[in-house]
Length: 163
Image 1 (cartoon, rainbow, N blue to C red):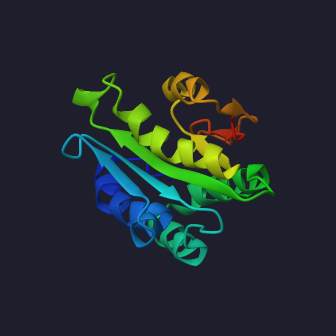
Image 2 (image 1 turned 180 degrees about the horizontal axis):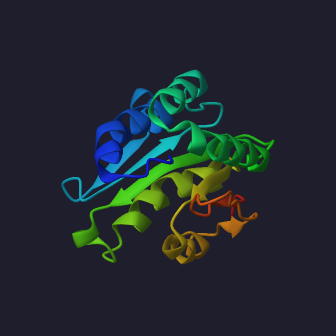
Image 3 (image 1 turned 60 degrees about the vertical axis):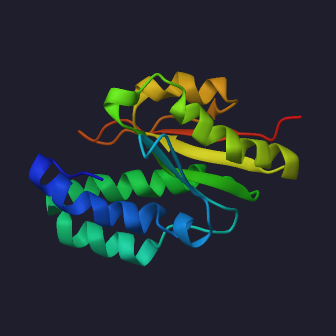
């Protein structure tokens, strides 16, 4: 999101999560594993984050010098979203003490099985290079890389329905 220090991150990130993936709760597509050791917010086809609220949050919480880079990143991300209907994974996370136990995989398998059944794509952007191999194991393919200024790289990934 472009918040450079831990205080701003801890203060504003919960609102970002609500705006970016909160509609998963409305659609019953927010999942958790092992007493909330891991969570994934999936948005079904046709459901997108609240763009107006996201723009307002960025305008009011991100310094002007970082906003220019962030707008560029968001514009590039939009260009990678598929034209076909798709399930979108805006957020997935596993408690660092619980990583490498299969929780992330289990949270992905539920929706990916549904994608295969329905013949629907799945799409995500990874901000953590360490997660690329996890997504690849589940059939996601790298579409490109987005990096602007000092922002961390973003890797858009697409998974076609599998038989």
